[in-house]
Image 1 (tube, helix red, strand yellow):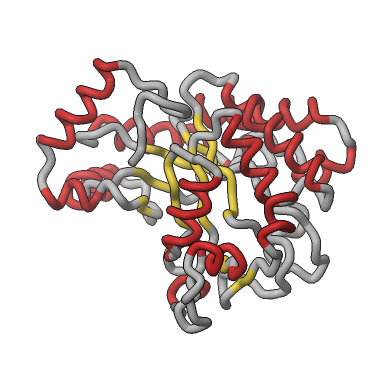
Image 2: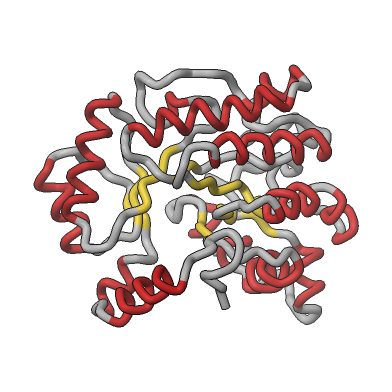
Length: 294
């Protein structure tokens, strides 16, 4: 059960009452809609109004546009949504992940190569200051994966490196920089950790093959550090972690093994239970084959 008064929400009694009253006044369709992010396919006012009024979405991840276009889109969305929307961007590398004319600062690997944690802080601060200025309030960042396999087709230059200690320090610095923009939130990804497999979760099942002990000392340490420092959200990847899945459910067969996005063992047992995460859990895109093939 999520505790809205605890980390990372810290809601007051008045805030909690607003949440409870809002939920009590929602229809079933509205409650279902709040579970979904829409990938906006148009920026016309009619389309945006239809999306929030007919589908009651909880959030949106929009297509690229200029700062002016995205700002206007976000204004229309928020003004027409019954419940304030989460508006997400992808500022892994800079403000250009929020709008096409945002500042491209540099990939996480470039930042990692400097060995300077302050650069990761500045990336988090500057990228999300630009995002917040045009109405975004959540970034699908930092990438918290560790590059153990150069053949991995997903991570590339998106990670802070292959040293878990450096990845932990720099993802935490990025989070701190983003949080220096009041009200801005981060969703670290891709739990339980990409960077080992040669397969791409966009087109196939992907597996994190570490033992529980290996995972604890690497990906687990990175996520625990972020959680302890107020991480708002975590994006679950379409990635299996057999060791921990069987730790929480020893009878689990290979056919029953699920990626984190569908796995109670990994989300309820590992993330909520062992790591003590109280924030929001998101899934990676639901059209990816790593999910649909299960």
